Image (tube, rainbow, N blue to C red):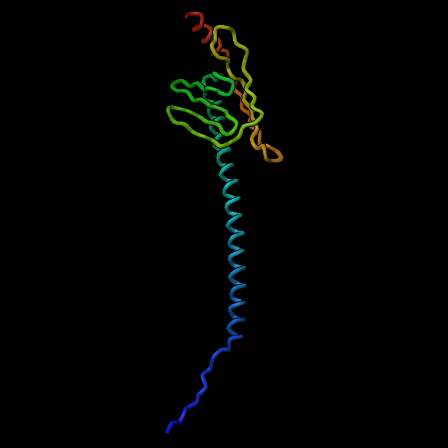
Length: 170
């Protein structure tokens, strides 16, 4: 009466399952490591591109301000002031960054200026602050070849005549 029916079901052995798990873990580990390497390279690229973007923006703003300014003065050792017809922009050079203030807006560029040189035109006592003729600085203390920024302002004789007349009138 008690007949046991024996039928075999197709199945995998424990050894086969362990081999498959081992191979799949190796594939997952390789994929994760590849992702980690690509992610690290992306972050390095993005960091260098952020620095490059700030350098390019600062270069463009300084070049534009030097070109369009009526005159440029040096109110302090680490500052220049670009004077336009209707407004001013002030650049402040510190060891860790450069700031630009114009019309109440403060821009900060995380560019570390080294070898800062601000050359001023010799002035008479009639002028409060010397005119800046050229500005140069380097960026990239950790790099083999730092980027050098150089800007020059060319003044016309009419500016000197007008300022001398204004100084004599006062």
